Amino acid sequence: MFDDVAANYDLTNDVLSLGQARLWRKEVAKAVGARPAQKILDLAAGTATSSLPFAQTGAYVVPCDFSIGMLQVGKQRHPHLPLTAGDATKLPFRDGVFDAVTISFGLRNVQETDAALRELYRVTKPGGRVVICEFSQPTWAPFRTVYTEYLMRALPPVATAVSSNPDAYVYLAESIRAWPDQPALAARLQQAGWADVAWRNLTGGIVALHRGFKPKD
Image: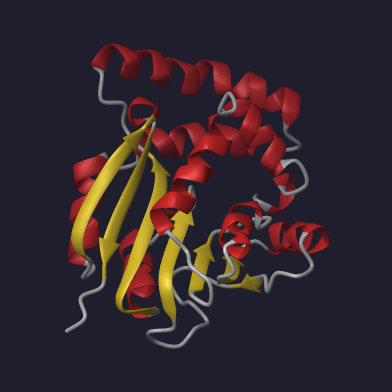
């Protein structure tokens, strides 16, 4: 499914998010806080657009994705990045490799969410950090109602106009509605071993940034 939307993926996301996607990427970069020589795993990186801010800090970033089509488009656009094919539940990396791991708008698409959270934990160095940016639940009830109506009614026709595979975005709307809210995802992070788990809402809770650390001991 994601192979089919790879070519116009970034443009479609900008349109459907009303330009908010770029703001969200900036907030992810701040939360990750990549520094020169650090190793960063950008999981579900797609075409690697999300990986660029990390590379610009001087960090060594590995964009990883399950979709070969996405990776092929990303490699054409960013040939200098080490794009890597990988399953989020069986990552092709050794234990304790990365200073930070991050995934934006991809965890929701992994069928075995808890397995992915454990894999991210496994490949992170003790003392390392995780940042997850994912759609969530708006905190203000009236706005939550309007948002849900947009997802189910407005998003599909907009996607039809700008995407090569609008059915993928119908799935997107349905998966957002079914996704756990902020406290529920935080609990799952804790169950996977992450400590000091916290989150921050963006755009009224449409998106939430969850963070955690791997204990040193």
